[in-house]
Image (cartoon, rainbow, N blue to C red; front, top):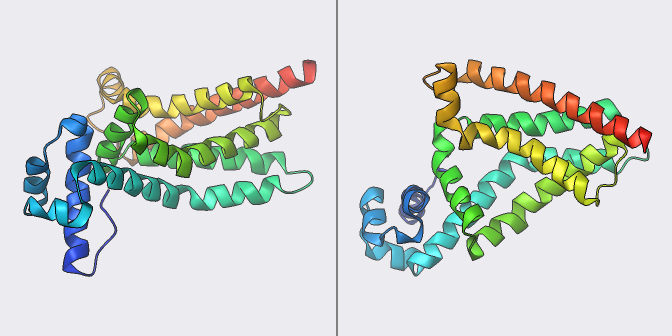
Length: 225
């Protein structure tokens, strides 16, 4: 995970500071020092003030970078979901595929070591939220969560605004997130040394199996109610 390639010296400096700040903030939160961030970025400490204003502003800049990064990874899927759900009778097979695509995209994202600092940053914000989390939530997490909830509701016949539907959606996402948050556990239990394409494919097979069980179960319950 690297910030967008840059073309000017200033843009390169900002990019290096963001990358270093993500690593430091992910590890230490706002207890990270500007001195350590600047040193890791290979920049003068004054560059943080020059480009961002303060450590707190740099923290917010990291949150914005994460929002932009995640948004770019899921933009096409959100657009596809919007288009499909706008149809009078969306095809259920197409709905399932979009849900699966979203899960597989998350698996690919969360099994890469390059995104570890991003995950640490977001995990800290989930447990002790600041204004930075609200920015990421409003811009990408809430829209993605909402679209996935609507897809699951459309497939199963449930109400997308029902709290239980939202909880079912969150539980499904939690299955995927567990492979990042419980990374060391799964590596030790399986004997894997790292996640690679083969391991990601196996994870995808399991998530696909669970997804179908969830969709079938929720659909059956909707028919019975």
